[in-house]
Image (cartoon, rainbow, N blue to C red; front, side):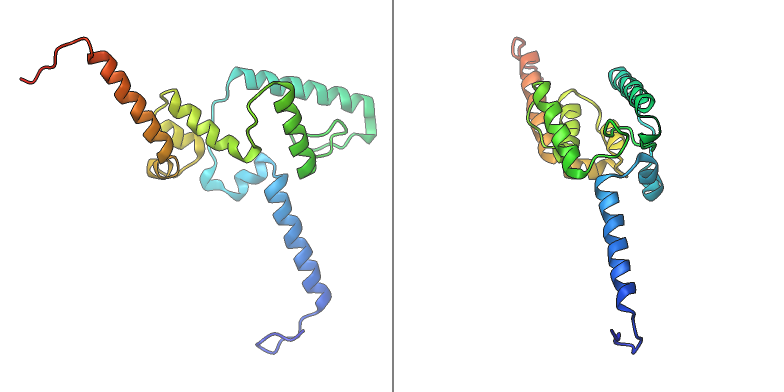
Length: 178
């Protein structure tokens, strides 16, 4: 292949670069580890407090993985993933989606698609009165205005609830038009 500048390109090198790019894109989209994510997106790196229930669940997962590793010995695939198959290998994207759907079903949780969890997280925080600055920080937005733009419809619902609460507070008291 000859480029517009007259350089000759080896077709095998082009194919290798395409495959490398596809592999990297797939890894970033589907199986990215937290450390890789933080290195790739340092501006979004942040420390979050996580609930004790999640810490307990992660500890149980680590214990299960240690049992699998002990049982499988050298056949166990060692890596830094938190959620992985019993043999230590990372889930394929379809495998992870399948496992996620199983967890939803077994625990009788609302059927929320995986990619909707971030929005659900933000909506629950709004519904429970968490300040916009805290929500923005938890989501990794560089400013509150981004959070307000993306989740404006959620905040509008929240403001309607605020108005109803104000009505309830003042409904039994005469208005001071002073």
